Structure formats: C-alpha cells, structure tokens
Length: 169
Image (spheres, rainbow, N blue to C red):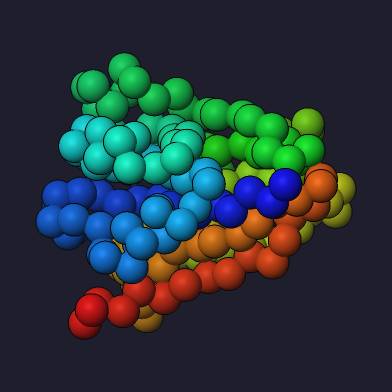
C-alpha cells in the first residue's frame, strides 16, 4: 500500500492567516496522513484538522500553549509503510543539523520539523531524511509560503514535493 503524506508546520492561525489556504485544505483531503510540526497557535486548527484528516499526527511548538500543550506531545514517532517517522518542532540552527539530528534520533528514517519557516530537505550521512515544509501561512523571509507532500511505500520514501502556495487563490 502507498501512504500519501502531507507535511505542515508553522501555521500560526489566526495570527498569520485566518485559515489555511484552500489548496492546503485540498491537500488535507487527498492525504492519508497529515504530519504537523508545531506552532498551530490556536486549538481550533487542531480540531479542524482532526475532524477532516484521515489521520493526523502533530506536535506542540514554541508558540503553542495551554490546551495545545496538553493535547500534543513535543515529539511524535510513528511507523508508516515500514519507515520510522519522527515529528518535532525545533532542531536548532542549520549549521550542524544533520549530525545533531542523527545523534538525537538514531532510530528514525525521516524527521519532519518546523520552527524556521524555511523549507529544508537533506539526508544525513547515516541516511536520516530531514524535512521542513516551511509555512503555508507565514513566509517570513522566504519568497513564498510552502508545504510538502510525499509518499511512503514498502519501506521507501517516494518523491518529496515542495509546494508554493498561491496566495491569490
């Protein structure tokens, strides 16, 4: 079986946007699994994604407080099609990230993270894939807002796609 993945982070609702862009909601509807790497800010988005997504795994970020911290872990780990995934909000500065994450998450195949709002896709010397989808609502210093999709099948991560959000839509 192939699992269709949607990777999100740093949505910051309703501070950076009133809602997720419609193309992101369409991606939620198409995904078998939504992974959210924190900084939801409002529990309403967690509730909305839980009610709409087939399956949702998320973590709390540094801007998540109260009910969000009560309901979400700091780190989540799960098996998807024979791959060991982890989801965390922060991984520290970009310099040294690969070796730091290898040491911190020795049993993972894929680590999804957020915090920087900067898309990231790299592979460590051991083979740990590091993915940051950026933010679909707050581009900060990036040219566009972004999110990622991918597939997992038979112990392999399929192509990872970085999607730029069309803010005019």
